[in-house]
Image (cartoon, rainbow, N blue to C red; front, side, top):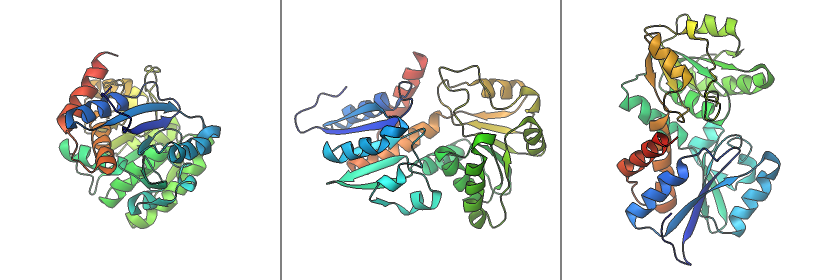
Length: 288
């Protein structure tokens, strides 16, 4: 942790779970590199504690928070305002506290976009299957729709209404109706038959449950690119099986990096030391 004074500013991450998160190590390394009197702390916040946690952000004058599963959508009514992008997406992953006024932002979208660019993936005109309909999936799908991808959203039966609502929100952006389907083997097989890109925007396969995968191995194929936003482990079961099937793969590490860098800049007004942050992520993953 950085050496701090009584005037130190506090930032952190709220979610459930958060013990696996590499964001504290990444951001604290960045604060040290920049010589900023900031500290970043993980806060496990259950769903029924979210309102109290956001009230605590105001009371304790916490400068900024990252928001992760399962709070990216439910936190919105508790904030004082939203950045235009976060409002269009309908999900928040970053909060900035300006003297008790809390504003929500979405840096997931830009982080995802930058990761596509750095991996040479161009969504325009591509057939893309997005798994999930939570906060991260919203940012991913919105970015893809904006860039001209042809989307299909799949989500588990219990939360199919989330996928339907997301598809409704996306359709005007995509310029056509976006299908929302139950995530089962039949629908996966049909959607992936002609897909160019598959994005796993669920937490399936995330540490400690690394044996999980949202897609059966036999549905993966050459010519498909598989992007798993899960970053811990770097090589999820989904990515390992995609590689064996001859598909291209993209890990979630760069998305974690870029969304974090943008969040840090919102809190501090200072350019993020991206390479220092990347090295800290990779060091943290090497130790898991």
